[in-house]
Length: 188
Image (cartoon, rainbow, N blue to C red; front, top):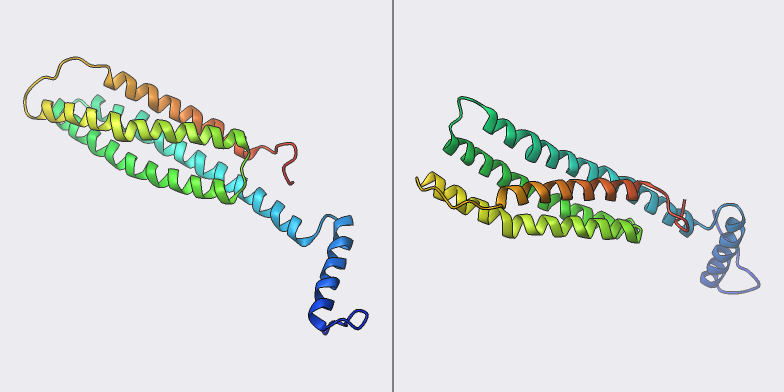
């Protein structure tokens, strides 16, 4: 469709003015195209982020609270082999969680999330960092000692690991719930 020039203006200026006029007319009927696109991106971003966080929470729940306790509850699996299996599960979980953390950061940036969502996500990432770079190496060193035949001194690492995993699970569920809900002032 060929556009008409407005008031003798060059064609490029005429197109800009026509787009501006359509934008004003569109704002009365639901906003201009830019605003509709922004609402669509924000809504999709919230939905994708909530789904991603729920999936992350499910992976954490399955690995940390189901697979590892089940491996130690198996009567045919001795302690050293159970520790080696648990170490492999947690190393794989750590890598998968890092991918989830990076993906959730990207979606949160693109999806224009609310401040409380970003706070809950940041706390979840902090817990993941503590578990990945401080706690898992300490637990792995204890596992190496046991596999080598010596018994390490008692420590609170396992209780701390469980507490941090529960904290991270709760933070992920809160962030998913906050991401899924509509905030005042958010585009629809």
